[in-house]
Length: 329
Image (tube, rainbow, N blue to C red):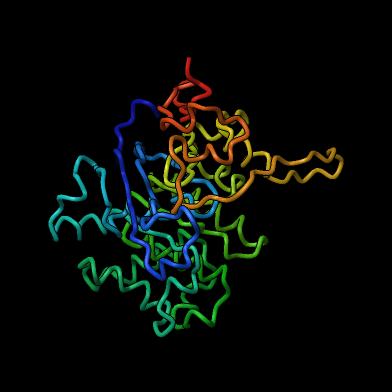
């Protein structure tokens, strides 16, 4: 896909939050600023499935919301199909909303509990100005795409009257009802039973292939990302650590942080010898980002230069980039 025109281009993206609360009870060394995203460069090509992975607090969800223009960045630039999101007027933003959609993590929080499922599906169509006589056709088409059984029978029900798996299919249908070209799925199966996850993931894969969607999947689950994404971006404390084809990142991780993430993935093999997992000391803290490489205070291979400067990007294979001083010649 190297020759495919980018749909999304991100340069130096940052989102900082000011901390609130009692300053006298803060941890020593903590800053007044939370650096949720802190200088992300990212290019997403049309039709590509990109996974954003990392521990909780690494900036995945904030990055996804920035890509959809749901929150305003502190710095940097997001260009969507040649248009800078920060310069769009109200009309352009409304058009952008039709083209880009979010799939929420928790389906029970994603829908108004006082709305029937039908009303929840109609709402984005009405907001986008779709003629009323097209509503039913579009809704039934979206429900067919997500393989929801007895869909018409469920439309008059409220969210609490259906199962979590059915509800997540409704949330997916709502994201697809406007025929978007770009979706961000934030942990789309983390709230579901294992028995229904495969069905939802298959729906996501089919929708991407059939509709030519460009998709960003936010997850801490490398197995999920491997199943649905061609490319994986590993984040830590608001920065990109590694970016490359998913199979390369999973089979041949380069950054010490990526290696630790891959090693922690359980293998369903009862005959496999027990291997002690690498245990990273401490935990990520966006209020106390260390100087230089943000991972260096937990990295088993850190050296003096890691504290002095942020690592540059190094291409170690075609399309496979790692931000680490270990790869400097």
